[in-house]
Length: 118
Image: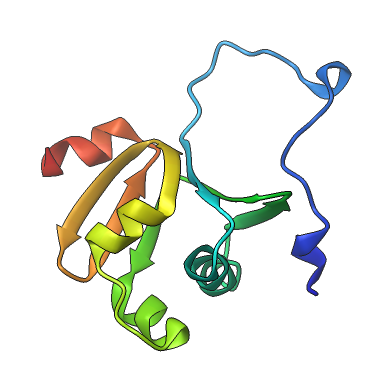
């Protein structure tokens, strides 16, 4: 198990500071499954991506945008992963989720960047 399996994005209330700034974070939460674990294993190799394993759930978080390459995930999974199957695998997301093409789903934390696709 890699070190990221033990890391946690969540903080206690005494560790949180509230600022008047805009976050450009984005991410997905998935129910733990074969597909979700494969997606997480592919994504945790990417710079700037934080994967958190929780009981029955997996979180993938990033800053700015996260690009999910369906061909890369399909290869790791050993069967086809489409944007539609990817969306089914996700319980929820934050940021703007955009299907760029049949092989690419991007989560945008910066809504100004996402608006050109909407």
